[in-house]
Image (tube, rainbow, N blue to C red):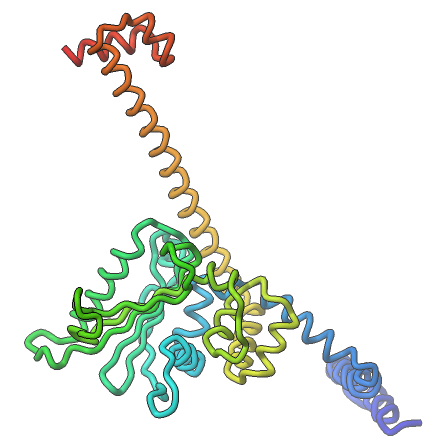
Length: 339
């Protein structure tokens, strides 16, 4: 009889009843994992596959999950890696340390708020501050909204009575899941340049990045590009094979994936995630309803203008009714307002 079998029998016969189940189960897992399943090469693959499928049930692009992955001390290494990738920093220029700022909006009430904004904020030791926002919904105001929050951050970086020299260089990064610019490039960067001298920059105190994830997923990718790796990681529909490649290539992505697996197993995170997803769906529905209503109102206003022009030309209400579908009573009311 093998040594492990003898140990198993000894525990079952000698151990107190209240620990038999726990110890027996541990030995069972050890025996089958190490002695049998691993010989077939099945256990590790199955465990890995189940974990990957489970983590993909939480969308990394959900702003709550993005915040939990990158917007705290546990996610600082991931945030530094992402920033270096977006800003294309290499060598001595790379960010090596950050102070991550707590998000005051990370509470149940704010998460359920349809207009709540969850972003990731951090500061570096060289007087720079960074803001990353994940935006899935096209509210038709992304450009102005970006300038508003960028200006607010920039002005807020100096205390009352402070010097202008104390203003922190501010970099804002918006990862959006919709088409923002009518160009094929998915990553666009903006600075203050002179209109006629493209090389003349007013200041580098403010910098804006837009990453259109929707466009990236349609383009060719390069796994040797760290930004491409991160943008692939954020895709909730990413295949198991590519995710395994990312994990094998990039140790920071591997740690972030493990963090995502843990979040997926946490019941409180699941509840908050579902509440946030629900608020996003409601917000999208409100925007859609507003667009439909606007189109209907626009069509009605257009028809009213046509009716008024017909009345000016002296057409009879009966003929206008036949041509436009407006009732005789409505046409008469419009005629009165015209007079």
